[in-house]
Image 1 (cartoon, rainbow, N blue to C red):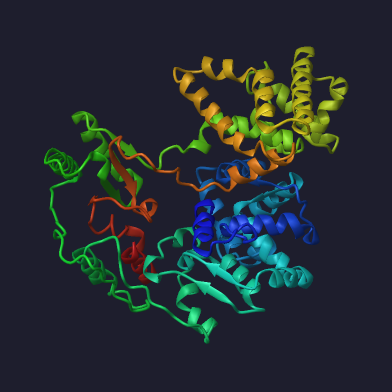
Image 2 (image 1 turned 60 degrees about the horizontal axis):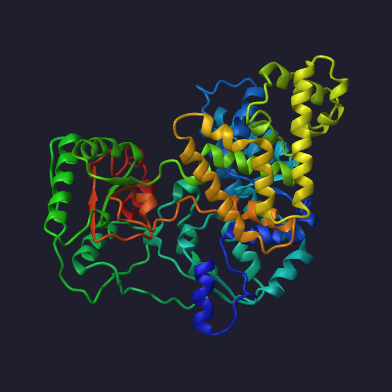
Length: 530
């Protein structure tokens, strides 16, 4: 959004500060923080990421005594997420359940949503669903934003889901000044809830709309465009378009047949090294694409044996690293001590000599007295089952959070983080656990550096803004250094990037097109788009 804002300012020669610019989720957050109270949402809500959501779902499944092997939590998450994408309430999801798994997912969601409410939290799907509900249920709020947004522009419209579609419909219905940019042939995120029908039905939804086809391509050669067209033209449900370029000709697309994945990997490595040896390309110019993550293994083995450097995109991302999540959990608890998930994560990090039994007794006592785990820390002297050492450790933890919380209202964010790291002795902890301690501490310092960008905000606001922006970060870490080696990446993750040399692995039925799509016409259409 920052890059787009800069481009807009340079184009119109005016400050773009008054323009609301961001992802659907970011816009939803702004609306909910300003006016969500009309629908019962506290403006200081926190945002749960994918890992947080999975942790809570697992917790709920344990409460319901559901076997994770029989009912994989990731499958339950997918069913809940899809219902929220469709703006379906938990109660309606339960009524509409047609299978045992769907019924279980709805029952899990009822408890999951209750947990979110108790912890003043929303997950990513809620940011959209609750915004739509707010605009639906409160005409005065809808009117406010319809007046505020006379003109609305949406990029990548083919990737919108039902909630995003409804959000746009609500906001644009008054002035009907709506411009969307998209390409149905590029709709490849159905598994995330994207609905290609949104863009295909645009002319039906807005019959007075003017359609402009952007068919000139600036990236590829005509050979590549023609090859792509002969794949996509087999899709019956698409808006006809044929891309062209001023760059005629170009090398032909090479189709290489190998015996198995090992021979395929050898062939890719051999050809890549030949291209580099000829001097026209660096290793960083080369990308290897595949349909599923598991396909990278054979090639990784060959590259490692040959000593060829490579980057595997889609591994553990920065904000998923344990030490980063630890510090963020501390900061979330500082911002909201009632937040159970963060409390559970860092109550014993670094180790405070608190055993599972002591923590379980704390939880039982809090539940029995109808209070949060945090509030129970003010009544440790009443907990007869806890040992004196456990009470002492819990009291020190409480004092740490209270001290840092007070500092967060008076000091810059970086100073708050420094105090937290010093008082918790986190540096010593992270360097003493495992051989990669220095690398992990470097990640903590990187997070601290990111937080320094918020030092210009008033105390308290900086912490809130930082936590919000971190929660809304893109899934894909910035890719700005290709000198390190070949890039290995899935087809879904590579969208929007470009490389001078591209290899595609596993172009065979069952892998690509994927076996799950073979019996589904809609699934096959998505595979062609991919």
